[in-house]
Length: 291
Image (tube, rainbow, N blue to C red; front, side, top):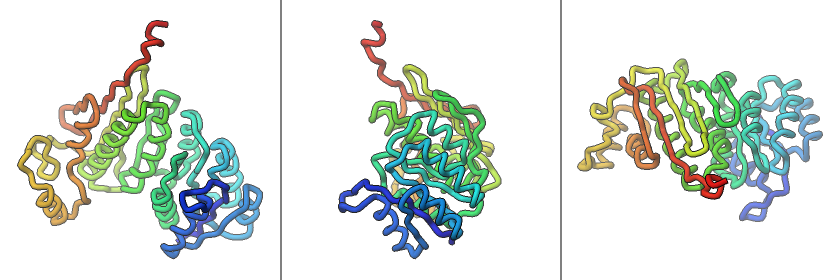
C-alpha cells in the first residue's frame, strides 16, 4: 500500500476543518499511511526524503501550478500518481491534466468521500499508468481510450465533470449520469471488465449540443436480448433483477440503459450495438442568436 502525501490548504468544510485534513481523516480511518505537506516546497522536500505513491494537491492552488509541481515531483518519484484539487479549471487545463496522466481532477464543490475513494484506489493500484490514453484533445473535442477497469470509469468521470462545467447545470447532470451508465455498461457487457480491453470515448461540444460517443471492444448487445438491463419491460421486479445479477457475479445495477435513455434527448446505437451516441440539446441564448 503506497504512502499518500496531502498538501495542506485553508479551505474549511462543514466541520470547520481544512479540506486536506478531512480527506486525510477518511484515509487514516481506512488504515492508509498519510502525511501532510505545508506547501509545494515542503512537498518536494518530503518526496526526496521518503517514498510516496500518491499526492493530493492543495485546493488553494491553480491547476496549472499543480501540473508544474507534478513535473518536479515525478522527477524524484517517476511513478507518482496525482489527484489534483484546484480552485477552478478550464478545458485547456483539463486536457493538460489528461496529457500529464493525472489520476483524477476535481474542483469545487468537492466530494470528500469521492476524493478519499480515488486516493485509496490510487494507493493500491499498480496498473494505472497507461489506463487513459489521449487520442485527440482540444476544447470542444476530446477523445480517449480507457482500459476496462471500474476505477478507470470513476477516474474518467472526474475529467468529464470538469470538461462539462460550462454546461447548464441540469443538462450537465443529465449527460454525466448517462455517460457513466453507458460507460459502465460498455466495460461490463462489452469487455467483462477485462483490463486488456479498451473502451473509446469521445466528447464533443457544439453551440447547441453536447455529444458523447462510446465504443466498447466487444460484439455489442441487442437491447431486446439483454436479461440484465431490460428497457421496455415495465413488469420487471428490481429486487429480483438485483438477485439475478448477483447470481451471475455482476455488479449492482443493470438499468443503466434505461436511466441513460431517460436523461438524454437522443440515444443512438450502431447496428451491432457496440457503439453509442448520447446527445443532449442545449438551449441557445436568444440574445446571441439575434446578435
